[in-house]
Structures are given as structure tokens and as C-alpha cells.
Length: 255
Ligand SMILES: Nc1ncnc2c1ncn2[C@@H]1O[C@H](COP(=O)(O)OP(=O)(O)OP(=O)(O)O)[C@@H](O)[C@H]1O
Ligand SMILES: [Mg+2]
Image (cartoon, rainbow, N blue to C red):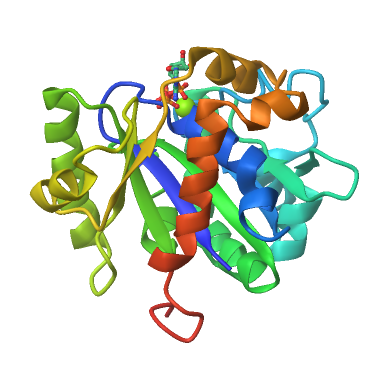
């Protein structure tokens, strides 16, 4: 089982879109495994205004875990999450609705990191949207505890320079762990190995540029089989299938 944390280093390359596409593709790509999307972007959630717009989340989410003041357990995390389908195969743990709320979340990141590892050991994979690195209330503890960290970036030179610096910082944060994976939005993957080697990444995986599906994911209006055959969801499926290769075995790097 795996805890995957997605982050960015510069601009808005598509962290949330990639996370939403992964969660949509997860069960088909990973033999029916359940998945929880954690909205841990301290700059504020894009989900409560989009895919979760029709769902009342006042008593749910990260803030409810903080307000509960108890220990953050795997059960509490599931209890605070929204099920996206009847059998709760896909769940979302809503985040802060604005950056001011993030201050109260800062202290919970270490406890949440441990609870998410526990949840993944019990059969629920976890995808975390950690937003852009360097935020005052960055969920550093989640980045440290993750099985796999992925830096999302676009193919332009400034984005690659920022992502390279982020990769170095993440390697420093995670001694003894593999370097981050790169998620390159808007390419087909040509030259991915060369880019990975140049940037010090474990691998670079392409996510297709697909404005229509990106928009539908953001508004929670992805429906039907055509969507699953879209370029974005096909590339997300390929990424989800490769996660296992980079995740340590349970008896391995987790400490
Ligand atoms: N694969 C994609 N194809 C086409 N457009 C995309 C793709 N991914 C993201 N976008 C578009 O780019 C914009 C930013 O995407 P998104 O909100 O996912 O970025 P982000 O990295 O999460 O940004 P932020 O740091 O502001 O949360 C949105 O308009 C989104 O529709
Ligand atoms: Mg985002």
C-alpha cells in the first residue's frame, strides 16, 4: 500500500488536477484498491469550491480533526472524509478553505502523517495534494513520511529549474529514501529518462495536456466511459500503475 504526496515548486502546474485524475483512475489501475485523497494544500482548497461544492463539509475534513483535539487515528481520518461513491472506494479528506485556516492545521501534520501510514497499511492507498513547497504552513511532516513524493512541473526552463531545486531539498528532507519522482504535465514523455537524470529525479512520468478533462475534474463533472479514455485519465492510469515500483516494501524504508 502506498502514501503518495504530490507537490509543486513553482506556479500552478497541475498538482490538484493530477491528484483528481489519479483518484479517478485509481481502482482500475491498481486492482480495485481503495484510495483517499487528502487536500493538504496550505494555500487553501480548490476542492471545496469545485468537486465538493455540492457536499456539506462543515463538520468534516482536516479542521474537524483539529477541533476534535483527540489523537488523529486512521478511523478518525475516514470518519472525517467524504465518500465519492457508494462503497467508499474513493474518499476525500477536505482541507482548509483558505490560507488563514492553515495556521491551525500546522500542528497536526506529524499526527496525520502517522495516521495516513496506518491507513495505507490497512489497505487504503493515500494521495496527498501538498500544494506548492515553501508555504509557511507547508505539510513538511507529510512529505517526510510519504512512501513516494512526486514533484509536478511543466516543461519550460524556469519550471524545471525550480523543480530541480525542490528535488534537492526533498532529498535532504528524506535521507535514505529514493529521490522524488517528477510528474511532467503537458508532454508525451519523450526524453523522460534524460530529464530525470539531469534533474536528479528517480523517474519522470508524463501527464497529458487535456484542458477539457482538467476542467471537468475541477468542477466534479467527469462522468462516463469517454472520460476514462481521455488523454489525461489514460496518462494518470499509467502513473498510478507505476507507483508500486517506487514505494518501499512495508518492511523496508518506513521507520
Ligand atoms: N493536464 C492538464 N491539462 C490541461 N490543463 C491542466 C492540466 N493540469 C492542470 N491544468 C490546468 O492548469 C490550471 C492549474 O491547475 P491546478 O489547479 O491543478 O494546479 P495546481 O498546481 O494545483 O495549482 P495551485 O498551486 O494554485 O493549487 C487549471 O486551470 C487546470 O485546469
Ligand atoms: Mg492545487
